[in-house]
Length: 134
Image (tube, rainbow, N blue to C red):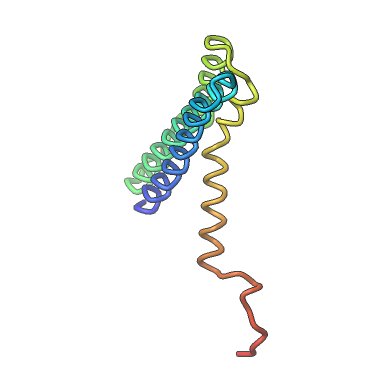
């Protein structure tokens, strides 16, 4: 379970970088507040449900090691976090819904890219071969 903390730390760094870019964009172009604000709220919601998922995975792994069976809400709690971020962003603050959805997919995309780069780094790439026979 040590690997999950490393992966979550990398995903958090990527998300914080995108949060920084959103704040920088908002500072440079304040007239686009509707888009940058929605993106920022979505990205915060995204990192929250990623942390919740990591906590849940660690908890279930500990339960399985102890011989017990884990129970919980799973997807429902993460969907509720995403829905809460969307409601706060769109209904309460009046930000753009598409920007909020774009922010909500920051951590899943970061997870995908980091996972693919990890696989490529571990296995190498087929184009790395030079045609030599073993």
